[in-house]
Each structure stands twice: as structure tokens, then as C-alpha cells.
Amino acid sequence: RYLHAEMGLPPDPQTSQLAAAIANAEQEETAVYLPTTATTTAYALSDAARMPIIGREVERGQLVAQLNRLAQGHGGLVFLSGVPGLGKSRLLQELARDAEWRGLAVAWGNGRELDAMPTYTLFREALGSLLTPLRWQQLRALLDNYWLNLAQPLLANTDPSAPHSQTPLHDSRHADHDHLEALSRLLLALGQLRPLLLILDDVQWADTASLEALIYLSHRLRQQPLLVVLAFRSAEARATPAIWQNLDALDATGLRLRLQLSPLTAEDTAEFINQGLGLRQDAPIFSQRLYAETEGVPLLLLESLRLLHDEGLLYRNERGEWHTPYDTNTADYAELPLSSGAPSTTLLLERRLRQLPPAAQQTLQLAAVLGRDVQFAWLIAAARLVAPDSLPQTEILAALSLLVQRQFLQETPQSYRFSHDKVRESVYAQIPPAKRRAYHCAIAAVIREETAQQSTAEHISQIAYHYRQGEQWADALHYTLQAAEQAHRLHALT
Image 1 (cartoon, rainbow, N blue to C red):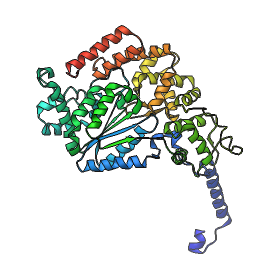
Image 2: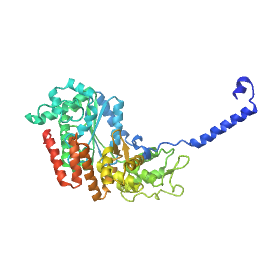
Image 3: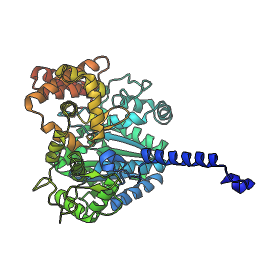
Image 4: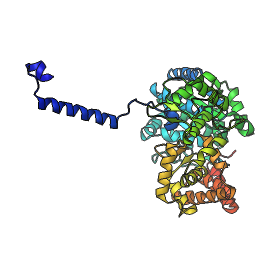
């Protein structure tokens, strides 16, 4: 063609044959290596954390308005509550992205489901990500050494250059007040350096000292660039008097905003399924069936879709289109073998777990006993103690890869994390009691060994918790007393 167009010369027969052969080869290669139709991402089955947030436009808009006020120097308190599975943590993740896009600093702390939480656990975790060497230098320029020294026990293990108190806290007649004042000044100074969004999740498991510090601080927030968002499960918080009384006291200080999440509507459920599967067109009857089954609870929607996919009842054809075996004959997809009666994450997960090979099931159970965040080294060490023959390291690595692929676990830069607390709780509840006790004892021994050279208050509390759950009462008492002594030494007991 180019010979004819540019020079007016037709190609000879050999050239024409060569061109035809090349064209045919390209077509064959395309047919082998490229799909005929591009498929869209099924976030619900591959990476739910990247799925667009659905049905929370109003709540997100209200939270973004608070971020805009924060950028102008006005902070405050926000409550975000609801039953498990409604997407509180997912909304908080979106809020954190919104804050970072606006140039705001973000810190995140989580309550832990331990019998006895170390004091100020919420702040220890959150401040650990903020207190870089640069921030330490800036704080020394803003705060008197007296306040930094008082805050030192709280800031332990955040930075080797942290100031060290030369005077025990109990030497001060006003130690309780001054300790709270030191923490308050530190947080407000961080906000002065850069407007700060402080997210505190799972507050139903918070330690009392952290909540009391927030009460002390709350009166100053409105005119300071520090916004604190507390998220919690309503029923669990109400069931714990110490937690609820402190939340009630915080509420009385005058919240900026109180949000309570509800299940998704039928319309939002349909959009959730469209986005979760990457559907090219609506599937109204299928969506109505899942809405009736899950009542619009996002976690139940995700687990239902994953269950159907794991069992081979939800699949893509060669064109990338989603189907079930019942598409041609169903009237309402009643044939889908989902649980009858009230929706249950536990029932859905029981069926999904049965689809896993034994090594993956055992790895997931051991991870569930470890807790919300699963340290890889601790998991490997615990497996050596409880299953040295049936769970070698290579099997664990393969199992972890599968568990991430199936969306039971997620990878973080430091560890593995359960895709949702309810997933961990459901897996944990299915472990036979004797095996559960053995796992707890093994994990206590691992944490004791791994942290022997640099044991923190949280490590000691974790060891005590696991020995209690393992019913090793002598060891449990020893580490419980050790945790109490450390808390008393830091003058954190009330």
C-alpha cells in the first residue's frame, strides 16, 4: 500500500504474500493472548477496599464539611456509630483520603479487643505515625520540656530521640491534671503544625484513660485545628458502662456532628452489586434477591457474593459476563442457596470456609486467635508450636496468598489484617474450645519470646490476655500484675 501510494509501484507477488502472512500471524496472536471483550474489575471479589463507596453521599458530605472547617482552623468532635458491617471503617478510610487530598494530617488509632487495655492505647498507635524526627524537633520549639517530659510515658517507643522524664510523675501533687494537660498540649501543638484529623476507630474497645483524655481536651477543640472522629458499635458501647459513660460525657461537651449509619436502600444495594461485580448492565431481579437476603448490610452483601462465587454459582463466561445456573428459568432467584431467615455473617462464612483447603483453614484460625492485625513472624512461630508437621512455612505462605485472594485477609505494609472484624470474630467462634486454648497459649509464648528484649505495655497486656484465654492462670496472673505495675508506675491508674 505504501509502495503504491508513495511511489506508484504495485507490490510484487512475494511482497503481497509476506504482508498477508504477517497480518494472519498478528490476528492469530491477538486471538490467543487478548480477550475478545475487556472485562471490568469485580472489586467485591478481588479488592473491596478499592471499591467506590456506595450509599453514603450524605454522610460523606457532612464529614467533608467538617474537614473544610478544620482547614480553616476549627476542629471539634464527631461520633460515627452503627451495627457491625455497615461500613463505618470504609467511610473513615474515604474520609482519610479526603483529608489527605486537602493537605491535612491524618492519624489513626484503634481500640483492641483485650480484657485489659494498656493506658492511652488509642493515642499510642495514632501518635506513632505522626511523631517523626522532624515533628519532634518542631514540638521542642513549641512546647516546654516540662510538658514533653510529662508526656514521655505515653510517647514511649515512638522515636528514640523522644525526651525522657527525669522526675517520676507521682512526685507532682498535680500529676493527674498535668499528665492530661501534657497530652492535650501535645495534640494541639501537632494541630498547629498542620491541621490534624484524628480518627479513633472501634472505640467500644477503648481504654478508659484515652476517653478521659478526650473529655479533658474536648472543650478546646472548636477553636483549634484538631478534628477528632470517634467510631464505635452502638450496642457494644452501651453494654460497657465505663465506655458509654465517657461517650455520654463527650456528647455533653457539644459535638460538631453525630452520624449513625443505616443499611443501604434497595437502590443503593443494586448499585453496590453493579460496582462490586463490575456489571455492564443492571441485574434488578438478582439485586432484589440479595437485598431481601442481606437487608442492605454491605458486609453481608460482600460475603454473599463471595460465597456464590466460591461455590461456582456466580461466574463469568468467555465474554466476561456474569451468570448463575438459574438465569434462564428463574422468576426471583429463590434457587440461590443463601441462608434462610435472619442474615448471618457467621453462616455465610462457615460455608466459605468449607471451600478452603485444610492448611488455609488452620492458618486463618490461628490468625483469628492472634487478633485484628496478624504479624507474619508471630504467625509462623506459633504454627511451629501448634502444628509443626501439618503447617510448614511453605504451606502458610501459600495459604496466606489464597486468603488474601479470597478476601478473608488484606495485606498492609507491616502485617496482614482481617477484611472485617466480624470476619475474624466469626472464624474465632468456630474454633473448637480446646484448640482455641492451645492456640492462645502458643501465641502468648511467642509474643513473650519475640518481645523479650523490648517489651511494651501493649505486649505485656497481650501476653496476659492470651494466657487468660488459654486458661493458664498462673502465667495470666503474673503478666496481669506486671501490666498493672507498669500502669501504676506511669501514674495512669485512677
